[in-house]
Length: 256
Ligand code: CO8
Image 1 (cartoon, rainbow, N blue to C red):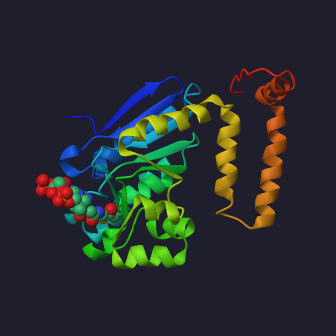
Image 2 (cartoon, rainbow, N blue to C red):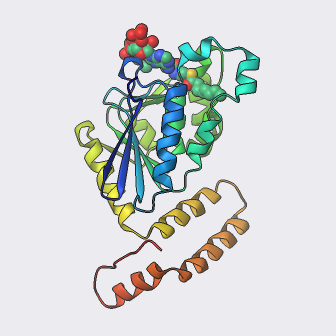
């Protein structure tokens, strides 16, 4: 059977490409299992400093697989804890960038939002169309979209099921930048190589600290940040980074 997630490594960056062109990369159980297995192995690899998650030119992912879900009963969903595995993907500790071209709908938009930030091709289209199917977002869309773009826009998207284009997605803060479709992978790779070139412990805790802002009060978040900041002074790379600056040379990070 064809692989549904293809992995390509380049230096300290690994790209995970969803590969179900016949279904616009709809996320079925096979994609979930392969994505989790492959991403978890890369996450545990100290030689990998950044992940890129992407799809095809036409679709990042057009949602969870509707045909697979259609067969399920309430008890199937309940006992299987359907799609709970994606929580494991969201919790990966290596920084991950979603490089989105074409459709990122339903579970596809939710998968992109599980990444640390989204770089969008000018062809990207985002949406949470589950309402049209008689359901609601089920992989975090109602929560992450509201935190990302605010209540008014999130309600608009979730209740009407409409799509937003890349320009609107950038305006409302869903994506960090828009690039020409044919430059998407080059731009994502440039960003990933920059991140992967820094000390991995520092990028891992940097993202953890930003994520903490969505989980806690400002005072607790600031306290957490300070503790983690102090903790980095135990690393080789903090000494190296600061010495290199003082000595006007490039740091030689050892990722420890
Ligand atoms: N699931 C299964 N198959 C799909 C999906 C999907 N989400 N999207 C597209 N496909 C298939 C089509 O059925 C079609 O297959 P076939 O050729 O065998 O008929 C093929 O992909 C190509 O699609 P289209 O012919 O429809 O292509 P178009 O270019 O005409 O249209 C669209 C593209 C607009 C993207 C259209 O395909 C579409 O509307 N897709 C569905 C989008 C959608 O509703 N997504 C949300 C799904 S629900 C969801 O994600 C819930 C997530 C939470 C679940 C967690 C549970 C706990």
